Length: 624
Image 1: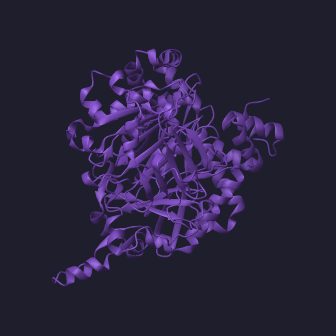
Image 2: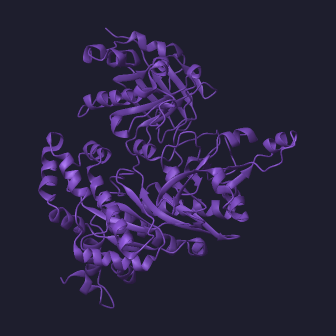
Image 3: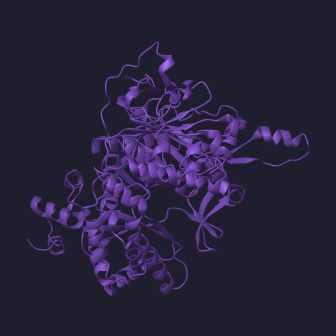
């Protein structure tokens, strides 16, 4: 059969030709291939070809985006007025291969795959990837692409062939690099090339390698394509950002109120760029929206709504030529009146208190309330994600941005869509009358399905000892947990982790700053309240780490000091062997803070009842 560029010139394509084009230009993954062949027209394939740079396929993230947009166009034509047109380019996987060969990386990368953890030249390979030359013909095509975008900011995103597919999500594992796209043509091209190098180098990212190892993918050739998108938003003085952005799940894994319907889906939204919606943001609170009861809010008073709101906004700053985080107060004055109504609320109680002192000013906080109140938006997001879930045959998550350049005219820009990994619920029964054996019994906390599983080891971080530990050395606790995690690699043991405050935070005073690669072996992870030291759980739903735990079927929950926690009895652990001292006698400081309990002979188990939203960990005591 002829090469697909020649085939695409034909007026009508046969089914065999369509399959050939799909496999050579887009994907060979069977589920995605079926979706593409079912819904794409001949003209859709031609449009992809027109936006493609270099040979090879366009990768998983690009395919997911195009399929989702096609499904919306086809099945929800009534929403066309609210959907921002597609404006992306695709750099094929062959460009990555040529880049490896041109910069003498191919042999090193092949050896890295074979030698795995014994590979000694990681720094050399990363350096070559980070500083390589891009083929001249590709540079010319990239320059032509920049003419298309003008000086509008763009973002270079990974689109590996394994990414955003039915088997693996790779959420947040590879780099996404914003390009300000300002200055002379040569400056803009240089910035773009550097962004491409950074994405290519991220295949050596520790998080990505751990993800591939965990899923037995180290032997699979990682072929990296790129998705280049216009950044959704508009200019506000020297800043550039969308009015709002976020992520959505067609299935809501967190039933935070009694009557919420998990099948309705959820959104996690912020004002400004969506980077704050998918990363852990200490001291900042994205808006969580359950789509069957959008108005339902855990925060019932104005003071609570203000306290648990967004305080900082991510923007592109033309002055500094980079992604920046700005205080909300600095952004508020830049917004036109209709956008303020969309993303801000006023704390009238605080205003009244100030007025009593003869201070008269408006107090705003960001909670995206205007979008929550817009039933057209809420209904569209729920219908859109449910339609995609039906087409994909499983729950999906999406990333999106909302722009609103004119009053009463908002637009949704769909940026990404991927299927979530799903597992079936089991029939479970939580025993009654055994409170003396329950390590914890909590309700309305995160879970995707009902199941019961044994627990072999429990890692417990002593909250008081962690609190008293030197601030600058607190990250060492995270690294130590990572060493325990590594010790259990390639075993079938089931591990649980109990940590004070927030997991994965970048602020050690709020919790333990682990990366997901340091907790990837754990089957259950609980954030534990410890009021005495000010540690308060704040489950980070929708973040990349949360998506990792959802995909790995990890229980992620909170042991609060409120009505959601019926029981928490950490003293039960003292009846189980603590084995860390025998494994790491040379670490006396860590042994005071971190405990590793062997609970195999205690018949420890974790039971999750998704229907009741209840999680119970039972330790039945040492058996002879």
